Image: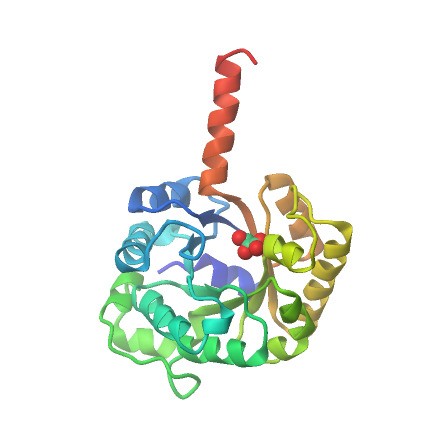
Length: 268
Ligand code: 3PY
């Protein structure tokens, strides 16, 4: 089954994707089909409206049903870094059992949180994830045996760097084996440093921090992802060397499309 984000990571090619904030299978599938350049979707259960039970599993299956055309589905779980030992562990297990290709954990600020996130996402001996779900292999279209032998290397584990503490502890976070990469959240990062939210670009002082994170992640052999809200910003971030770039959200794209069409219709 297709996993274009993993392929892009392996060949070090920037991978563009979209944020899914609206719930429902029709929404996720519509976004997945919108462009051949969409190689992943983050189904956002932190700030987005998709629930874990039921909700995220249905959206993952709707996207996986596209077969070779399916983008990789990554789930942003609701539990944040400080809850990484407790709530995050079962949420990670749940979304991976439902067939997600990876997990994104918000607000991770230190090594211990990162290590517990990675452990929850990997089967032993690397991690502590329990095996039992018949669903992952069905969603991926492989055998249970193949699932067990390929899961640890194909599931992507990403943590968000979006707090001052996370930046301070970046070296130790990046030293965690099994972590695939860090995802910069420019909104929370700006707020954490006392700057306004990006509109659409971050404040120059925050930009300096962003570039430092990119350099450090690559120096430690980790991927670095960034959240944009426009195609233009995304093209620039790809040129800068970011590996995974959010281009726009479903709600953002819908609002833009409606606004433009209605402005033209009304002769604005
Ligand atoms: C942020 O910018 O804070 C994000 O997490 C992106 O949604």
